Length: 182
Picture 1 (spheres, helix red, strand yellow):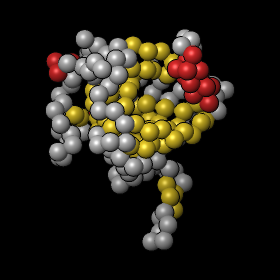
Picture 2 (picture 1 turned 180 degrees about the horizontal axis):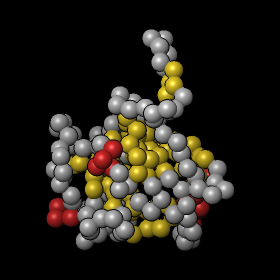
Picture 3 (picture 1 turned 90 degrees about the vertical axis):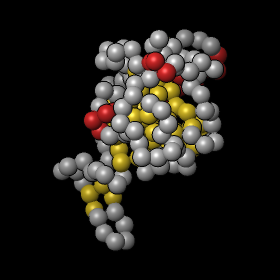
Picture 4 (picture 1 turned 45 degrees about the vertical axis):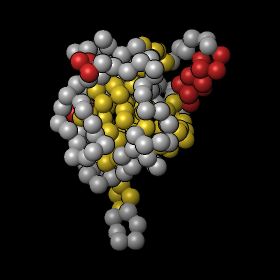
């Protein structure tokens, strides 16, 4: 599998962990802003949102999800068990997509044609964190150490369209594919 060359990987602040590796960006709301939003259980709650905090149980809104016009929200279990990104990245045209690791750490590889300078940005996403990618964000996911189980939030029609495309080879209408820049 083809992975982006070092010259096309954005260097940024490094995570304080051996997992981060060269070119890994720290997952902060500011660093991730061109691609969407960050959810971090330990760092944030949406100001003014419904919440209840107690010693026995707590809940708060981490993010709202926008499935796009006339879209229905889809919850999916997704497992990743690959160390290298595939040759093509995908971008969803109509919906956001949320990804929340449950049992493993993932690396989210992203670029955008409309905001990037020809780079692939890589973010380490650990259990207890999550990301919401904006429509048009080209992305792919790799796992750090074996299989990582994630909860994905998407749009029903996008999931169905992508599944049909991957199974039959027909062209998807709600998802586009492109190689990473460079």
